[in-house]
Image (cartoon, rainbow, N blue to C red; front, top):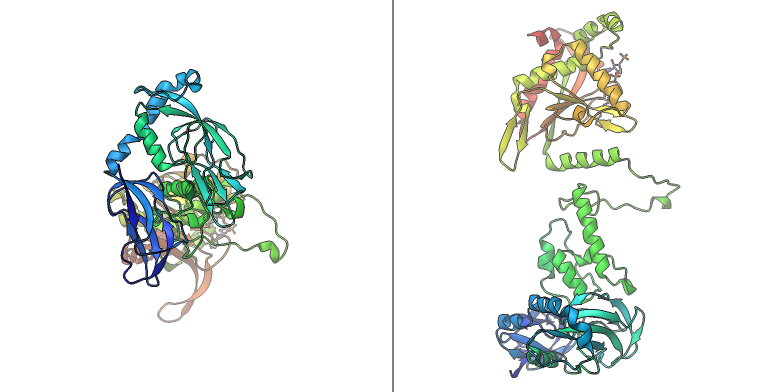
Length: 555
Ligand code: CAO
């Protein structure tokens, strides 16, 4: 097939333009109009398209070169890209390789066989011309002994003062021995590695193809493929945009990485501008990409404690606190980490609104105190909590829109016919929420005994997972500690939570004069998707009414 020149087309009046990106490599199959390279004029960057379908046989330019209309930038052999692809289909080669691997040793010393059936031979890959450079250090070895590789797969990366290049394999085959190490200095003709090359029965075609791809190749002396100058594909931003967990790349951020690493990052949808390179001059290596992706996955699974929240929200950046004074670091307890994840999940998922109300518990407190002796006999302490539990159970029964969970995936509201209420317990190990079942069916003494028992179990780390499951609603009482109001976070998938603050004597206008009344501050946070504001006000008013006259709890 005859070679065709790919020339710079009319540049819309621009004289000389700089190549900012080379989008193909020797050996790549392209379709008509596929972008070959990107140039930048004063006004815009422009992609130069391929004049037809075929295979790139030569690249005469690199990033940074200046070109003008009519300059030849590459050569190609015409032909349908898909047809071409089928001739070097990796699967075909892999198949023939596995079928002939056992024969590789006896075939090794023989000249390359001219036969249609598969066979194998050993090749030594040599360093190709390096743009006139010598003694260029190897900064990365991209393959390992035993790897099965494809034609054009990068073998090693070398880096000069000006550019980094990957030396591609002229053959498909298996890496037998790597003859260089990182840091070695290479010049044209140096031995790179030994390969067992598999013949797939189409050797003549393959040879002529290999020659056009790598003119210096000589199977008896070793091969000299064209090195690939580092390039960045156009498709990268597209791959990155697939993941909403990444911040947009910082404009102008310079990324140092070879094509194989860029390819890997593209395949994994990793934003290279966010990856820290561990190679020389902060060059990004394959391991860096893999570690970054692993880290991102872990954060997503843990509910986002890292670079982003999993909702595209940038993480809080921590300063070096030790600059300001002595510090000490300790790992988070498991409970703290789990609570953090749950809180953040609820906070990010639920549109929260908090409704405030005061309940006049003067009479309730008088009654509660009157029960002190009875409580001592029973060995149970009656605090305000059982009254609040009972009042909440009544309110949940009367306003069942609070006793639901939302299944947004199925667009369903799950209505619960039972009333189980969680109570937040402050323990030395963190917050725990044991659940009291069927609160509506239990008396005040039972509720007092059960809440005290569960709170003790929580503090003694004796709660079982089942003790903390199944709540419809949660009460978090800070009344024993203090405060006038707070905005609790809904314990999803419940849709509401009642915060209780410390009761205080307040002057309350009775229509004729101010009366000293013991007022209990209530803070009801709710999921505004499930509950509307009017219902929330009804709920807290009802609570206030029930606690204001506890006889109504019996009705
Ligand atoms: N106003 C005034 N006094 C109150 C009160 C209120 N709202 N609630 C309780 N008290 C009093 C009690 O009557 C008791 O006083 P006496 O000893 O004089 O009788 C004292 O405060 C201590 O009560 P308690 O806290 O031991 O008992 P409780 O039934 O009220 O609460 C429990 C039990 C488990 C809810 C509570 O101990 C607890 O852990 N609270 C913290 C919950 C929490 O951390 N929530 C935050 C979650 S979000 O971070």
